[in-house]
Image 1 (tube, rainbow, N blue to C red):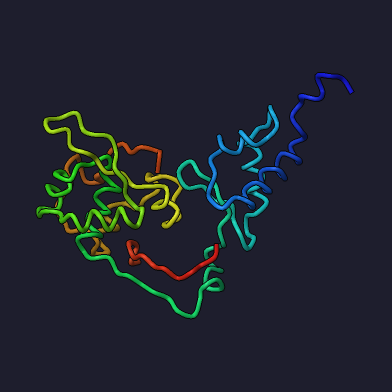
Image 2: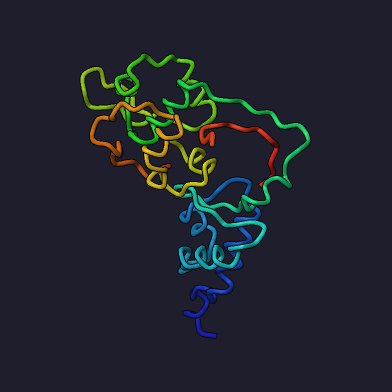
Length: 213
């Protein structure tokens, strides 16, 4: 074996096994960069992830991406098997539902902009609840008078609703049809979409069920 071969990346099949093992053992989702830091030099993390994801398609667990993070999750149609006997449900208030929807579709958005779109003030408790759920977070300050903070959705929000990016959100017309938003046209057009940062029914229903995905 030549000296150069000692530094060659392992065969792709072995890289796939390594990525699979790391993700299974991890207690939290991992980014491709975090995976690359643990693998031998020269490994193709993106290809290995794609192969693992393909191999688990249709299985009891899937490899899912939320934002920039990857993790194994129980197949959605089997989640009922993971539920405990006691399920605690907490319905979000209409104010929280509307605030979360506005942040998701208009991020980065300031509190004043949320209030302008809703037409009413937003209580501190509503913002605190959504941050406690780890569905929204603070973004950069807007470079305007007063330098107000902005709000963004989180990777936890994407993971909870099975989204890869905020661009995978349903159309605003669907949310209005479901009664989650009123019929006031949002600033910037009917679809209400603005550029989002890739950091990140009752669709907006939070459930704590002890599911072990």
